[in-house]
Length: 201
Image (cartoon, rainbow, N blue to C red; front, top):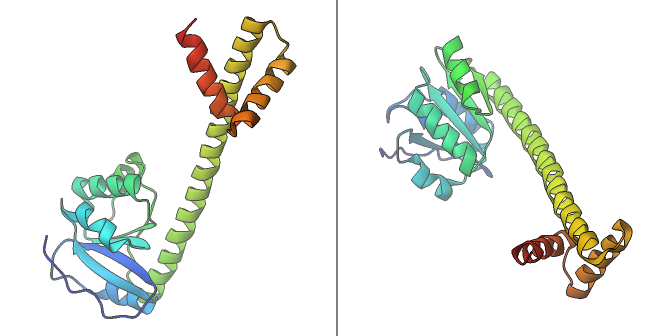
């Protein structure tokens, strides 16, 4: 990977700036500096993932003429392993390119205007959209976890009712007592109980 000298700006946040060549037009970097970001420019290639953890950026910016399939693949992997706000500056955006980004399920804000005050506004929108998306994802995961835990509890109560001839209420009380006695959550006890009882049924 070609090293690029980062900007000498004192800032609390870091922007990882993906570019296509070592010698690149500096308007995006300068705009990010103006927005109080320390900028780490990097040529986007197959080795960027090895350096992502060391940089730990607050936001990732892609500055290219056209988005290539390799760019989309790299951004997709980054989004899966280390989600960050993504801001894509594309000189020549096309409907096919935008659709490719959508199809890859990349949560990014796409812009073409490189004027400094527009760059900062686009950055704020990108971060806001990312935070909103992450909040929705977290909420969805919590709902999924609750449904999964409820499924295990229902299965465990059903087995207890069948094996011991108890009512649903008494089966629930039994699970709750077991959880209290072992100092564990009821869904953990339920999973262990189901696994045990089904293994020996």
